[in-house]
Image 1: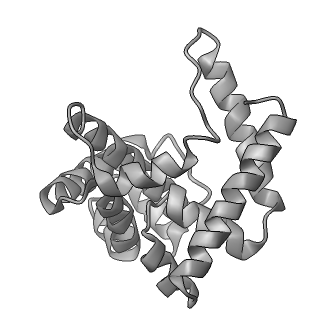
Image 2: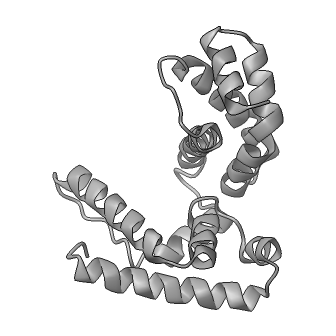
Length: 184
């Protein structure tokens, strides 16, 4: 079913909208949550919470890209669950991906953190636009979807070592770019 028709079902408040949405994009969104949470029951709860959040937000929202919108809602729901679950412990798979970026994105504790976060987000988006399609895909898969190196390699039909090296080089380029922009 076309995205516009699914959105129309949401606008009509038809429960079929949730069925169509999960049939079309549920596996993708579920995988992004599973990469963060590593617990099937938490992922199922996040799916339900994300579906409810989408139900409550459309209307008035009119997403231009339903897949991206749904995945972002699912990812944010999973991240909230992750923070709750790991308040006292660490989740090695997701933490390892975040640890890789830690050098580039050192957090600052001051009142202007929100403004700086928006500037940093805009700078990272600008940086990503300058990357090759493959490097951008590797970066997003690793640091947005939290895919493992092996999963990225399988998806891109290359060796894991190539993915690791490209991600390392991309992080170095990002660090240099952010220093040049005065953000770190």
